[in-house]
Length: 499
Image 1: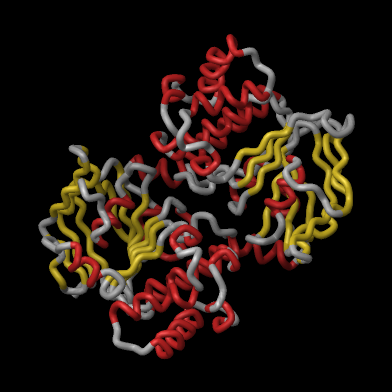
Image 2: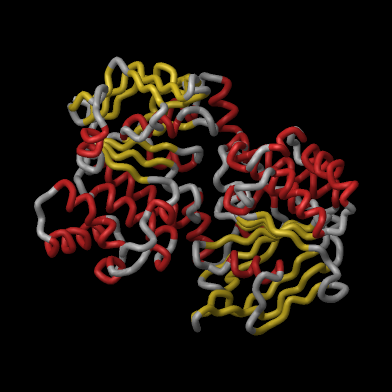
């Protein structure tokens, strides 16, 4: 008997049909992946499996059986009893999902307080056991820490441990590895696979086809709320039948960047750059050269120092020692940063147009010229200028990222630093943003620094690459050479994990 049976599931929100007649089953010990672009209906489908759809949603199904329980007519109190007990959830953003004011051990133990009669001491001991079961090192000490004290990979493991505390028959993992670096992602995927192998039915939602290949037994492809193709992972991913599925898979495959000639002189030279926080070195003696017109990729695990190095390059932080030498001296180049999370980077109260006008004002553009410049910037990044009237939350992920790029371009930079700019985007949207960046680089003669955990993307967009580990640049050189024949053991591990 399947642990999860869904037949004819439909979800309507404010008159919009977001999920339309979806049917699938997941057996105990099986992992079924749901893939598709933003707006395909993946997450709202997952929400329906947990009773977490919006209050305005109308959810109907011919069958909705979770661990043998008919959940079609559940009240909220009945869903609360089911969640964490028969079905668990692992969300995308562990830092947001975990309570920042509560220690990790207490977070993991919460489902035990709700669904068991264990004493406080027994719950604490069980929480440590659960953290150990998800391969968290030094679990007893980690249980006493707060989420912000853990790396991204450890936070995600804590979230998985919390989801498993009630021993659910079904585990829903919604984009659980999106923002993780390659080696950390590989470990979390291996953990999810081991959870399925141990007998849990796993629903794995992701836009990362490579991750789906590693973990899924079967795949459902969704588009506009409907399942357009499904089958074994081997069949769907190696011989897709639907044109949309073929496009989705093609969009995740990037050809290595061709060798480029005619790169200019050095724009920036880093000489033994170091930075420490609270006495702990974060960047340790980093040296590199950035050439005019070049894209320099920076890769490494969470905590390797990538973002701190980027913050020093854009001037947000200052090096404790060493030097960043700009050609022409400090201030000779205009540098702008594009953040990983554009929703968090924009003021949610302002329209996109107001944010762009603010950037233009800071750049000295006269008030009378700003409206026309906003429209021109929107058009340059492939957005309808009408969207400037909207607030960031009213845009899709891809639209927000384009708007963030437009805001960075408002200052007319010659160096653009992009920190994980496409990590949260679906494959086809990601491909369009990467193509946009290529066009902008050629058209504006931009020099770029591109930080990413996606090695395929780095190979596709970069000329040279820095590999960082624990704040140290352990390997660097032309991206084709480094990725084809890595010399450092960490680079070899990173590349092996990304394949």
